[in-house]
Image 1 (tube, one colour):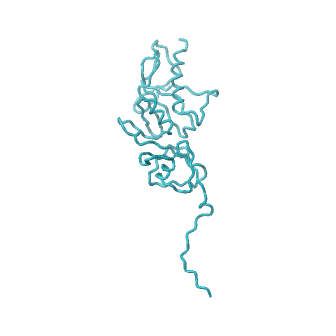
Image 2 (cartoon, rainbow, N blue to C red):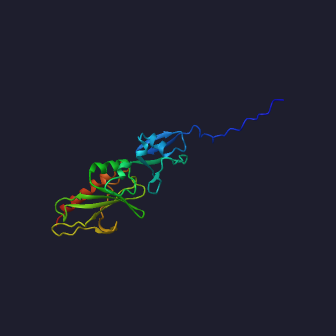
Image 3 (tube, rainbow, N blue to C red):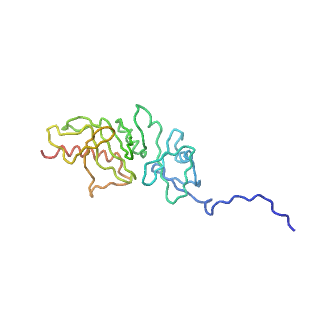
Length: 230
């Protein structure tokens, strides 16, 4: 009679999980890992963000605002689909008391820094807005500079940015009324909402359009308004 097998039972992995490859999108790059539950630190390292403790990592859930992932927090990648994340250098959240209450995709953050105007990322209730200060206005309006904000809706950047909101309210220097505007309360101020929208010939292009292209559109709205016949 052969001796009994007294070895301790070994844990088994779920079938197929050992060799599974999980895809994650960090900023706009797709990476692969065999770890089904990597930490925030491991994801930042995978994306080449060094030193990783100088970056914040945010998960982009469907239909909701980004959620920050701690360095030691584990993320479960086993759900179907590609998990999406964005990163933010921590030094962007510092300086001059500017509010950074949510995170933007990396290309938007880079454009804001390149553009050079003071800006804030403000969350009021469930509404997220990017606010630029001292935005230059073409000659022909009642002011030379203005604060302007745009709403960032759930699903951005796949979901479009629409319209623009100005403070103080803009007016033609010749007294002509600006059509399709109305008041909008936000951040303790009454802003002037311009109801300007993309057309079927110029739709939002996911993967191409972002803050930079929308603000270029805002600049064109301001210029075109001045060219309208009195």
